[in-house]
Length: 548
Image (cartoon, rainbow, N blue to C red; front, top):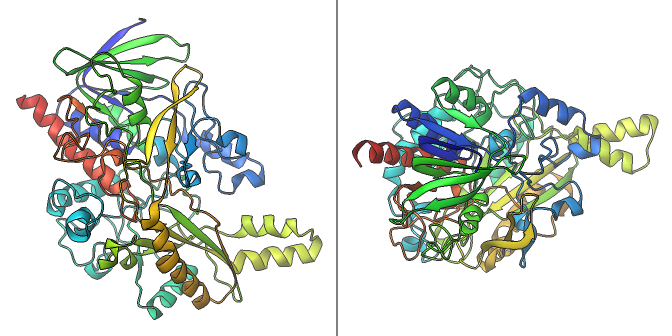
């Protein structure tokens, strides 16, 4: 054992959840040590990595500028062989769980789109209202103040009109810190078409500075490069939060791969153990431990920590660790249009159709979010034109046409927590000898019925309204990179992993906050809910350490 260190609060993971908890604990006067499996890197390096990629590698390979270290592998998708290296997938919809997170300081916030939807009151009562899924162990009015705190912590821009907010006309304790980003030409046109169908395309709340500086970050200047990296830090990413944590006295240890959670005789967690890049081992003690690695790495660590005291793994007396894995199964439709649409003005995502997520139909099939991707089409147009073998003026003309007259519509479906959608430990091991995660995934008939009878017909109608001359639907469900489940929340310790504060039922000083705790996935991006749960957990941690 090379060394032992300690702090009041040890946080494993440096993504948005870990950073928010660390800041709250430091503000309360507690000592904090954060452990990160991957490297710490400067923004300019990621930007240069991206700029130096071959042109074909820049399209939809958002992890390519983040080459993994041997001790912290993550999923690469540039080739089928790379996709098989780390995350092991099986089941009828394995492709729908091909998650694109990175193990770097800052986590997936490096290349997220910044979208910050809230849940609706109905989203938290699926079982009571529709007889499917699970209810949350608390009501919407409990999480609402934490949503507001999260919006100010992340710097979220959004509409001032209550009818255009989500959920619409629901009382908010605070307005958004900033107004919304303006729509580009393509989003204006989609809004018109949606309205003709009785649908509302509303501004997406985003952790992005809209026209003003906020929290030391500049205003968005419309680089349209939100993923794989915002080059100027207008969008929140945890990398901008790490220096603030250090300025408050927090310590951050990168390249520290936690592989074991150690518990004592009284079920309290006593330490975590980590490998350094030389495979040396270290032990860290604390009063409270927060495992905020994401919805895959956290249950993997809990299961890998199996020992005589925890025969099913840490925090797993319920046998629910690794179960109920969720993401929004996604379908995309690529369109060619008769007239120019001109997506690519502003952020890569700025609006969504949300009223399709709600309704009594949820008793039989999934709700869904629909949107048009707002990324610039010129790289795609160039790649497609080159494949046609064109040269000279013909090539230039076709690039211009495809850049203006193509678009992508996306639908993300609401998942339900199914225990059989499960993460287990693969027999295959990584460079450190740690078992790789294996996930079985089936989107379920609940989603398949929605796609067949509800969402694909809506996509086709939107495409027709936009003047599509070609409609190409993805042949299978895809991942949305919103990792949920795995450490599911509930009031009953026999059927859940954590309580309403994301505290493990089995260990009073172990917290497992974030997407893994969410009892329902809904059809909207999960990050703001993860952030709200982080702040709720932080309050519980501070209260526990102050009052016992």
